[in-house]
Length: 168
Image: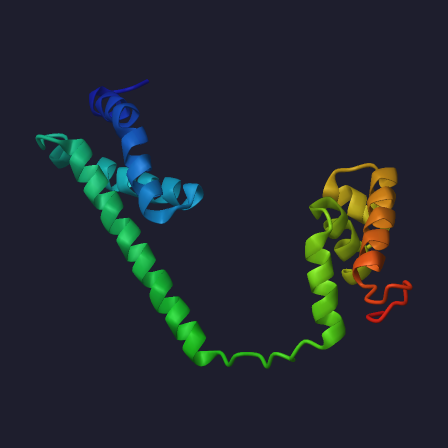
């Protein structure tokens, strides 16, 4: 049940949607936000369709509206971020001790899958089955990663040639 204006607008929408979305996506860098802004531009076009459809390039009008909406959103976000950063005090940052620094350095040297397992289980204090759920891996795989990760960390955190741990 498409009347003349509705069918005309539907054809226009189908023909111009991808280009309008490309413009808003390029401006925002976020696909979800881009779709939202493009949809808003088409809502404005539909509400003024009698006038917009008479333009020589109605697609250009929609892209211009979408561009303006994108810029407005960017400005609002920037103003809000500036206000928040000026009104919210920075939390005090504790200086890292030697042990923490050594641990972080060592964690960066082990394979990423092992690092994630060690951090989630030992630092985030999650049970092995929860780590397995988060990692989309079997429990046995997580246990193996934990074992290998702990062994690798033990070697990396040993400074003495005789194997003595200096950063335990």
